[in-house]
Structure formats: structure tokens, C-alpha cells
Amino acid sequence: MHSFQTVSDIRIETGGTDKLDQYVKGLSTNKRVAIVTDKGVRSLGLLDNGLSALKSAGYDVLVFDDVVADPPDTIVQKGANEIRAFGADLIIGFGGGSPMDSAKVMAHLVGSDQPLETLYGVNMAKGPTLPLLLIPTTAGTGSEVTNVAILTTGKTTKKGIVADSLYADRVLLDAALTFGLPASITAATGIDAMVHAIEAYTSILQKNPISDALALSALRKLRGAVVRAVQDGNDVDARNDMLIGAMLAGQAFSNAPCAAVHALAYPLGGFFHVPHGLSNALVLTEVMKYNLPNAKDWYGEIATDLGVGQSGNSLIDEMLRIKADTRVPQTLTEVNIKADSIRMMADDAMTKERLLMNNPRPMTLDATIKIYENIL
Image 1 (cartoon, rainbow, N blue to C red):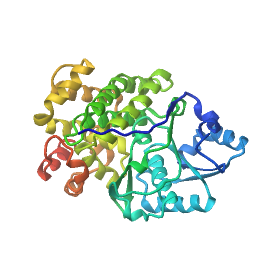
Image 2 (image 1 turned 135 degrees about the vertical axis):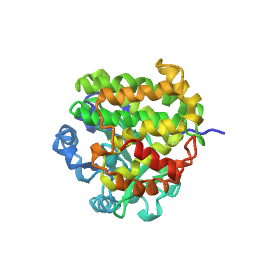
Image 3 (image 1 turned 90 degrees about the vertical axis):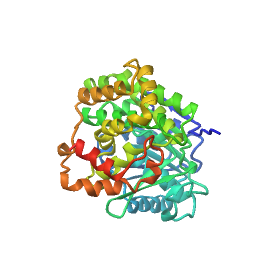
């Protein structure tokens, strides 16, 4: 049996954020809106026109911009408390994966009485949530259409919340928000989206015909668009293709979950604060090489669909080319991770059973150590 869920209302308009008051219609009843973002996004002015549109239309707006990368559970709880005190009846998550993940959890915390510590795991988050609108400002995480949120608990541990109650009520894709992204972030987030699609296509437990179709469609969009957007940040077609590709990949992996690439990437973020997209890009091709004995047919199908060859090795070579052409860092040394940290990261990666269970080839501690050593 297969099943498939996604966000029911997805709207695409370049420049749509400038008339944000039109996109909250039907979601907010008391005209009190909370926007969850981070200080970096806010400082770029990406939110200014949308805020003006809301205020001109008579909305009271609370902007919570304390979100940071790899959002700590304490910040998410703080945001939920402030939003509850403000009396908002709509939350807008505005930014990359961290603000959107935070907004999802805050919507659940404010809408229900369930304590945060009880939400972690699969289908543990239950009960009502506040209406939620998500607007991505990067084209990578696909968080806007997933039922997943990743938080940092304690100093370094990352935990996932996976539940259908985390799906947004509405999504706005506005390519204009991504025009100013630096080439390095464009590259890392774009490859992140490709990772989502590749892992969804090879996810052994819940892979299904719909997730497969979405993953292939995502990769077709992303393969050419990532390099073009890196070369010309104002290429509107490339930016749109990236945004739509990231969304399609998000829909795919939300139903056919990610695997060992993500499991091995998480310690890079948790211990060393390497951005999530870059973490995935760093470990991607070595994990693919490890998976090749079990995933060669699936990799070959992707390569054939993309027109880059017919073998699993062809797909690996294509991802190596894209990493080279976009100039993302290729070694742990380039992100200041040393050899003496490898065992610690490997031990942590092996705890990510929620992800490893989906991998086409069983992952071992020795293999994890070897993969890290190969990218040192």
C-alpha cells in the first residue's frame, strides 16, 4: 500500500510577498499575525514590503526574528510563548529551513497544549495547530511542503519532529526573494534539494510512484538551474526552477524519507555549525559511492532520465560535476573539521536510526568513519 500527503494550497508568484495581505486571506480571522524569521533575512529587507502591505490592510504584526541556524528548542519555545501572549491566530514562517521549521513547531505549540519534549519522533505531535503560511527565501530545504522539523536539543543533538500536523495550510513561492542570495548559498541549497530528491528516489521503506515522479521532476528542474543561478543570481527562470525544484523534492522526501546522506550530514551541523545544505553537499557523493552496490539500478534510472548516462556511476559523476561547477567546498578541512573529530561524528551519525532505516545499503560505523576520512 502507498500513501501520499502534501500541502493543499501552493501559490507561485514572483513578487507575491509585496502583496502579502492578499495571501493571508482566509487564514487569519482576528488580524493578528506573527511572522517567524531570522535577523539575517530581516536585515536584507526581504520582509519590508510584505510587512507594509499587512499593516496597510489593518493587521497587527509581531515579528519574531530570534531564530538561528539549527534552531535550539529553547528559542522555539520562547517564540511560541511570545506568539501566544500576542494572541496571533496565524503564523507566517519566512526564511530558510530554520525559520520555517521553527514556525511549524511554534504553530503546534500555540495551537495545542502538548509540551515540546513530547513532540519528537514520528507521529508524536497531535492535536490542533495555529494556521500556518510558509514562504521560503532559499531554494533548498523544501521545508515549506514537508511535515518535518529539525531542532537542536541540548548543545549539539538534533532531533526530528515528523507529523502531518506540521504541514502548512498555504505556501507562497516568490522567486524574487532569492535574487540576492550569494552564490555559495545558492549552490549549497540547490545541491541540498538534489540530495532530497535522490534520497527520496532510493528510500527503501516508503518509496512510491508519486514520490518517484516528484523526485525525477525536481532533479530535471534543479540540474541545470543550480549552475545557472550560481553564475547569474538574477536569472529569473533559473531562480524559479530552483524554487519549484526544491518544493517538488520536498514533497518527495516528505513521503519517502531521507537516509544516510542526512544522517552523516547532521553531525557537521550539530557539532561544527556547518549549514545544512553544505553538510549534505559534502557527504553526498561518498555516501552514493557506498550505496552503489544496492542502488545502482535506481541511480541509473535517474541518470537516464536526466540524459547524463545510464549507470549509477554516471549519476555520481554528474553530481561531482555540479559540485565542482558551483564551487562548493568539497572537504571537511575546508570547513575546519579535523581528523580527530571523525569518530565523534560517526558515533553521532549512527544514532540517526530514523534516517538510516531508509538507506538502500545498511550503514555501519566503519563505513561511516571511512566516508568521513575520504572527504577529509
